[in-house]
Length: 114
Length: 112
Image 1 (cartoon, each protein chain N blue to C red):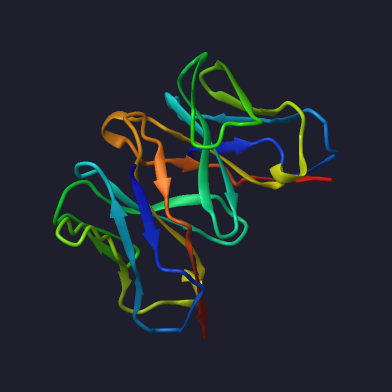
Image 2 (tube, rainbow over the protein chains, first blue to last red):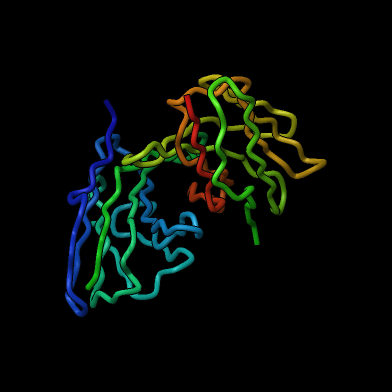
């Protein structure tokens, strides 16, 4: 069964802490994405990557960075967490090409910043 | 830029009722359109898609037709079940790498 796995379902961090959210996919997909999901706002794209070591900013990259050292792993980093980054974070991957838009999502990581 | 507008929820229906969730889009050209579903406690999963005008996507009894005249992609189901209770997201392709632009989501609750 194909899978996108996010390392933590629930995290509680303090303001100013550095936070790592990890995502691993086992489908050999080229493209990976990080979205945040907030009530009333839907999903908003933070960053995406279309190849190892390649990254592109999405709609709301401020306060975030990403790392893709291996094809299967895409990490989201909050350098200094703030309370307005309390949210649900969703990782997704896709093969692209003719399957563009057919994203496979992880179960999400709910981050609370105190 | 490209955008998606969905009807606001929540939508509450009785079992076996007819469902329509409206979705309209603004886009350059004719991008592929999608419906995703998020069941409680889970990530999103693809429900159906349509890649060109007049295409009908269908899955699990749900249907949506790509209407370029009205720039719409409304989701319909003839008879909903309690197990259809979820949040539904309309989306379109935002770029060449397959990133999606999502609507805000519509929460559906189906009562027995």
